[in-house]
Length: 84
Image (cartoon, rainbow, N blue to C red; front, top):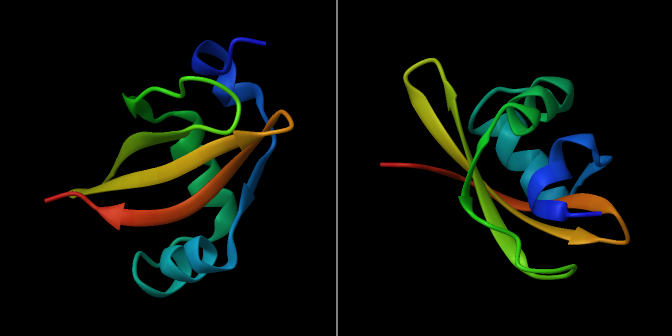
């Protein structure tokens, strides 16, 4: 599977830190965050399985960057940052 092209079809899991950031800071539930990820643009591509990549999505006037990796055909969201 070409992770760069097909990341939208992968199952998504969140680290505890990423989930807390989404809920507390951005007031998003995880189903809304999954939708944002599936419609996000690739900011830094995933080179291979296990490498770090970033996805960027707009939510209202806020831009959010998802720092992710792909492990065993699953997209793992490590942390979430606000883009300035």
